[in-house]
Amino acid sequence: MPDFRPIRFLSALALAACCCLGSCRDTPKTPLERETVSFTKEGVLRILDAETDSIKVVLDIEIADSEYETQTGLMYRNEMRDDRGMLFVFDAPALHAFYMKNTMMPLDILFIDSNLEIATIRQNARPLDESSISSGVPVQYVLEVNAGLSAKWGLEAGDRITYQKSQ
Image (cartoon, rainbow, N blue to C red; front, side):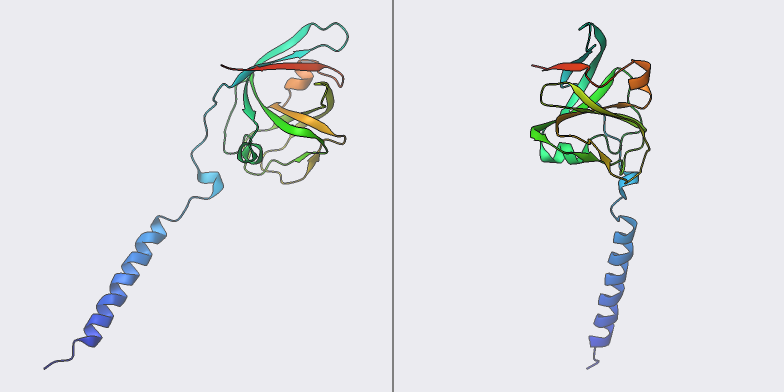
């Protein structure tokens, strides 16, 4: 009677190779190859002039208030309209640092204290840059908008924000 063990072994080896090659084609996408995330309006934010209390700008916002949302932020997005932003809400004031890993568009980052006043503005954070961007002072909120808008709108430290979550 013939010994079929070598043929079974070779068949198993060939099957394993095919499975491996097939799975290589389905390898997970790198972060830069992921589908972009679309904007979901979760509230409205107003930025008010520190001296006159007049409204400088009104934005539709997404609110990052969970750990996952805070860590992901605006990553994997190719663009954002100028009337939109992302507001990060933290439980308590602390020094915060952000970076632009997997963020495809340049941003202005506004660090906002517990009194809802802009404490620090970091302009033109570069896409994909993993350098740390620090608040410099304890803050409880961070607002990200497209790069150049904080200057265009004339935002300054001391300007205030108000925001309301959508129902």
